[in-house]
Length: 202
Image 1 (tube, helix red, strand yellow):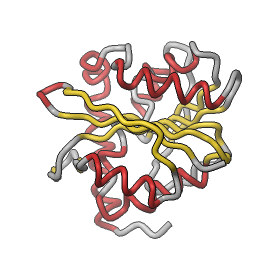
Image 2: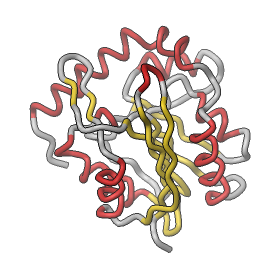
Image 3: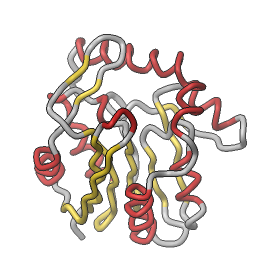
Image 4: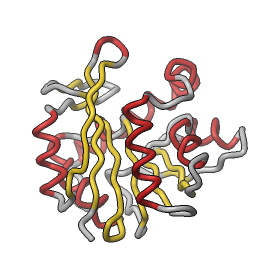
């Protein structure tokens, strides 16, 4: 995958920001997924089936993986931030280092989950990342993703990209996946979030 030097630099800065902020982030976000995310995760787990293999991109503190595992699926926990993996390992939940922009994902998986993580993918790289995710799914496999609503972009040490709901839904479909459901919520700092459930066609 051809990744521009500017993108690599932005990614490194964002990862470093999380390395420094991981413990505080864990304290802030809580340990139960939002109901909108829960609903999408439950459907993804049902599609994966009992014992199904789910790749989680950007596990962070691991609350979503915990929720999924309680539903009877197996989760491959990954993150680009070592400190998050250390926090999970300390409570007996090992994970693997993975950068969704630069690394291959493996698979095929029964589902892929990426909640509040693809907001860090530069706009000109999102199609490549979504195509990579689609390729990692088995036919019929599910994809759950949440994105912040808007059109803006932040730079500096913590790079984020906002997407309008319809624009991001179009990118999901362009990657070869079918949109199954969408939910909107208002999160911290009164920011809107869209949660999408999609699937690779059977």
